Image 1: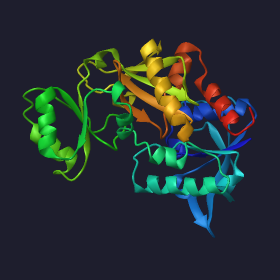
Image 2: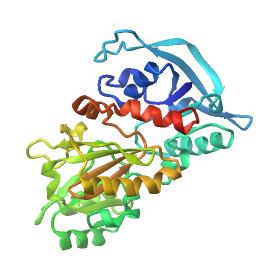
Image 3: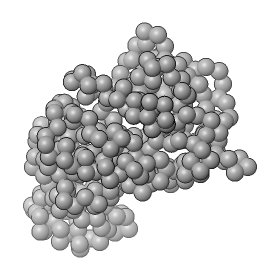
Image 4: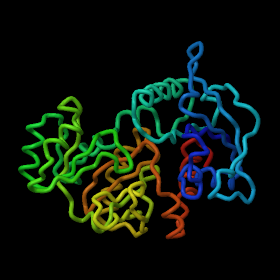
Length: 320
């Protein structure tokens, strides 16, 4: 099979821990081919969704900690998205208008026979922070608003809250507002851009000291281990990009119940791969753009997440 990755520039990837690279390694081990393209390589010509795609291969005995782990086979070639057995959208956020336009192109390509994972509609209709509102039984008290007084009232009610932008990633723009926070007004004004931008506020979940768990759901079913991302001492954010470190651990019964509820609801909507962020017993985000943590879970547990994903991908395109 021949897969296309829509991805960030390859030299910028940390190949030793990148989940997309882990997928490529598993695909190569199973005899598949793959190409890559940047989001800007997508285009429409005479109504057909096309891409300037570059065939690539992994180097034998590659040093995954270097930038020299892959080679390019020839020059980029213009082809239809439908020419590939599957297209994997693995471009990291920010989820800006260019990202939204790409999801529309994926919808058009799907109508022309392309198989895209996750689908354009699936990504676009489930923004990662807003998507949790579909499952209030599994979330902490949450407010989504740009109204300054409403946000202040929420803080006054719950006293210890987390506020964050709706389009951030890696812990960027996340603030903890404790009782008596002297910069409350300034923080809310900054995040909302003086009341013109909607943000999220959530009651602080003290179980963050035990880690912010990433639970991966593939084809509607959770894999058996989560990665608990542990915050640095004195740090509110547990994101790996913010200095946290990951500890793999088995799912609890409650984790499994939450993940199956979410997976079985969302997988039929074109979401083959989902990453839940869970603190304590509460879902804080539902990641559908380019969920990660494959490598960390695999290395610590022996459960090959990438192989499991590629198997599900093969089954989804009808060649199990």
